[in-house]
Image: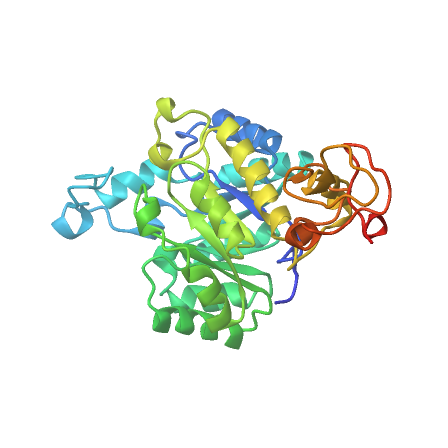
Length: 350
């Protein structure tokens, strides 16, 4: 898999995970809060801030028909109409430039998920460096085609998508000119559970499609993202909030600043720990070999005496003959006087 660059940030197996903080609607319709979120996310060490670019009008219809009302008894948005939900959650388009400029000042990459063609056109005026396709839009092939034609890197979430649907999305992107594509494993439940995350799909998806694969995660905590890095995830996206207690459409499954800092640190550690296949001591371990067990003389012995279980033992440190020679040494004669605490060696035998 080739390294992909978003601005100057390399993304790939040979680089630490690319961490995205999704602001979504947790700004609670306050630009001041949105900018503070950007500041706190930057302090936590994220690589990128992602917005969602849509309006209620571009997402759905303002009708009360049951089709347009969330019926799921388990949903945190139960009985909310889609229009009302998106009206509350959307990030006003007039905020985008200010948020993006603040990100730039703080050294954080800023981009967005467009949800229709008009959003792509708008984001192009802001010269975003890449695009993200949300899981629910993974089957919106005209949108994927539109994004691909910009020639910019594309990240596609695959929540709910079958293999054939992912294949259609990938082929559409490729045929429309996308050269840099990253797929994200995702479970589209809010929140998601570790049991339903199925991150073993990550290496399988890498082999199946030949692209980098990351994780768009809606679980609570950082365990699932850390584990995904161990399975090869190169990108981690999580929802961000200043405080879950403040509420917000996505607050229930979003991480707070201190948790996001832990996410950045622990996923980096997980990536660092992968290393390469290694047997035998690395250079830093050589000194530790001294603390292995070895065979020592444990009583004063005279030249000509026979070694037995009463005058030799397997103990630490490791300056004597290895333990595997203990039984070989039993019955051998010492060729010189030896004090207790002397490490065994073949020079003492015979």
